[in-house]
Image (cartoon, rainbow, N blue to C red; front, side, top):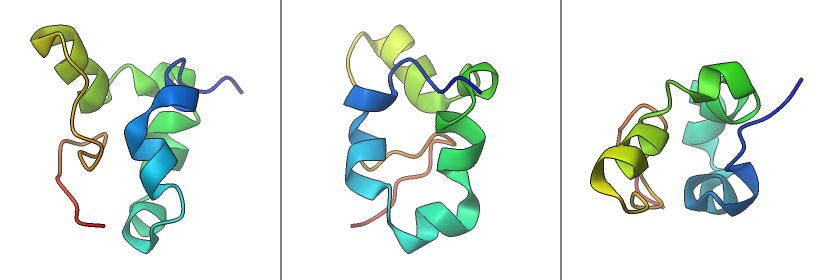
Length: 67
């Protein structure tokens, strides 16, 4: 299965890959590890709309989490 094209440089993935909330909510499994589902990632949509990278602590669903 192909993963998100941005995975290797995604601040969210890099910084929160082992965070218990991230694991519990399955964000990486649902958005980062599935290329098709990654298109619904609000981080990707934010980057496209705003023209800049979203905050690292913004999840693929748009929720802001703390460290």
